[in-house]
Image (tube, rainbow, N blue to C red; front, side, top):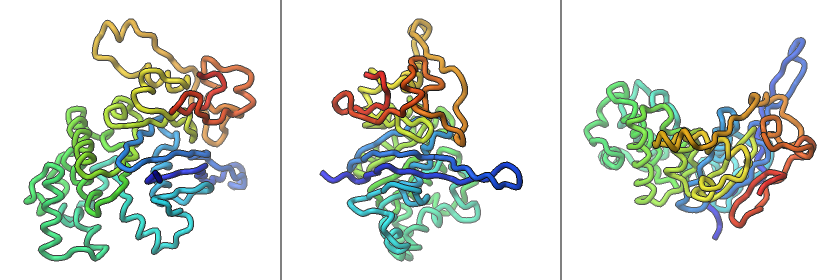
Length: 323
């Protein structure tokens, strides 16, 4: 079956200048050769430390950021080969839920205007039909249709994120990129929003590219998980298999940092503490990008970057030593 989204050898670089009179030019490789597929109705979680390229990957998948190299194919259509009109047509089926619910809504617009704006701009609905659709979207995300007359400042953070979700669903997308959708919310509200996203997916059948640095959140919502480090995917596996037995040393360290509710088990389990700091993106290390912090690194890791290979059926890992 043709995947909904296919990313092949995707690269995104940001050129910067420095040095005397800003003559020295270097490139930050935000995404460095990422390949993945996302099926219809599937949730692929993308995890990693801040600055590893997760959000850039999501933006490139939607065509918001133009890739430096590689391809992004949505339902068999290569986005790089589209003009502005063609990209606008495809983008109707691809939407995003942003991280900050306070900044993603225009404070001067009533929330009904913000939620209905995608429909109005594309000329799909107007007048009473538009108002009815907006009311239905608000109720779909657990709000009252009468809230359409209010302004964003009258809502809590969790309610604003529900509004952001309603706006993303207005055009009935097939793919939604969730960029840290609960990281700015109180802990008590996060589970409500996550459960809402899971319920909406079951009812509407859309796919999620779910970006987060919180493995507990990704574990709750994802079918498969991709682990990123310095712009590359170092492990990609089904959720349960990855958390039961992580293969890459970096994934092992991330999983060992997940808190366990049982204090005794939390105290007795081994924890992996990574040494050193995350390398500067302008000066990535040669060979395996993780070798400067890896407790298992050997000489080969300093010379050659391992390829992302299927070393266990259904699981991809970029490591010279694993499995």
